[in-house]
Length: 197
Image 1 (cartoon, rainbow, N blue to C red):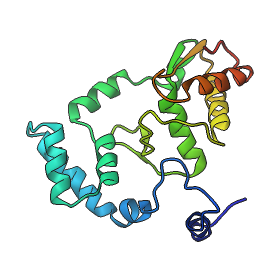
Image 2: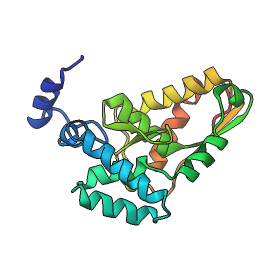
Image 3: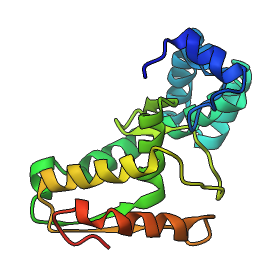
């Protein structure tokens, strides 16, 4: 069933529906209504970075000046990178065609959580480097949600389409429920046309 933005807000505020993973009630205000402020912050941070100022100091100074709140700062921290870092990432980037026949190594929590956020309608953004990022910030407290299985199916479908030779999915053992996620991934192993570890 599809909901309008207003009906979703009513269901969430009434407690009949949980917020999607990685979402906060204030996200529309923080990221849509204040997008021009965030663009100015990014431009100012990049100005400082290009003049040799340290990343953390540049971000702290600029976000304080613009009176950003913690979720905005998290988004900016995850989304901004130096020109040098951007060049390195672009040089390491592979095309889909270059993945054919190769073994693929996946940061399981990173990819699965981002897909869960996307699939559940949560808050995500495109960083300066072109990568899709979320604001879930689970910090070791992961739990399987309704979209987890679908996220694993999507990983399998993409890997099958790219015709990679094998995939290895790494999970951080100190993260809660990593064993349960590993078991769920193994349950979906038949969706992969290649060995999946």
